[in-house]
Figure (cartoon, rainbow, N blue to C red):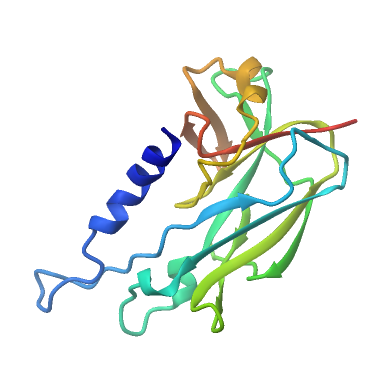
Length: 200
């Protein structure tokens, strides 16, 4: 089942026209490769300030950009760090920023608009002909948490994601709902996210 879902997520990318034909009716459109995030040290719970390592890579063959375009802009993405809660009306998570981030491979991606997530842009590895990143996140407050994608990346469907942690907070029809930068965001289901607990 998980492999089938992974294929469904990849299908739109594989079927997309990466860069249109010449002419005004078919403008060039950049498409980034799909990154599936892997948690290296999977655990249901972590200690305060313990580092959670996340990595991902995608072959550069799948990257099609437009002439003169900044590849960093095409590849830039991010991870929301959410603390699960039952204390808010019509929301069951809040964005938190009480964490430290280590960029071991890849780098932070700064934009000129409001964002409240951990931004990153993968780095090109000539040896592997791939774009990849590895970063570590440590949180300094106890509670039940969730990592969700900011844009286009998903956590590996074949990994354990501790989805049972979400059960007490599933009060909005199997969705995660939170505010960020004066907007309300929704993430459906639990399979493409990563849940965990930070011990007191």
